[in-house]
Amino acid sequence: MADSRPRSELLDRVLSASAAVVALSALAVSVYQAKITREQQKMSAWPYVRTMKTNAPRYARIVQNLELGPALVRSTVVAVDGRPTRHWNDVVHALVGDSALKVLAAAGCNGWTNSTVGRRSVLLPGATVHMVSFPEGSASRAIEDAWGQHTVVVKVCYCSLYGDCWTATDAAPEPEAVRACAVDDGRGFLD
Figure 1 (cartoon, rainbow, N blue to C red):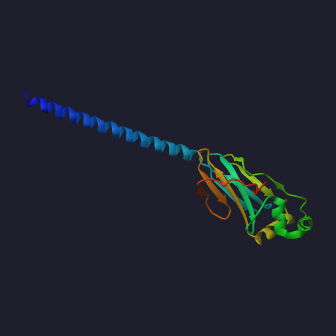
Figure 2: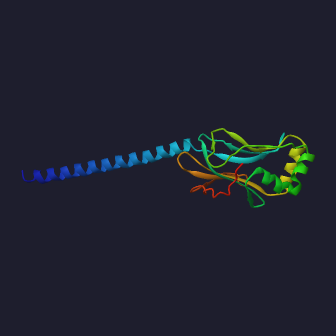
Figure 3: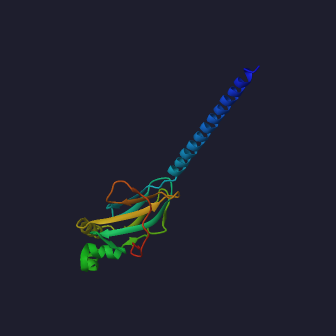
């Protein structure tokens, strides 16, 4: 009988160790599964913002959110030849020079329309916003010609609902992941 007691203790220890291994394995699987579920939730709410120009039938600069989640815009920069601007008037002036109004008036442009895509804007899934749009005809051609002689970059920094952030620019084919969007220091684009 003395032999059965040490065997019983050994068996109890092996069973206890096995139960601990099974419990730790179940915990590891649960943590891993929770991580995968969280990643899937984040991906299902990802925005995908694209900036681009259009020129048919009229010249326009647009911003689109092509994915499933809303894009929380944190900052917008519009730079002409590397110099940031604050308004579309500044952009047009930089493109066509001091005679901006005369050139546009001669081209039949009585004005343009613009929409704000700036700090605190939200681009809903599937949304397309015309940041600036010029009337059809010779005005659009005049702006498009002037735009082609300069480097104009529209850059939008945006975040998802989960705090993941990207920078979209018409100079890059894909948005670039960033840690966070730079805080607007009062010199950001206002229109």
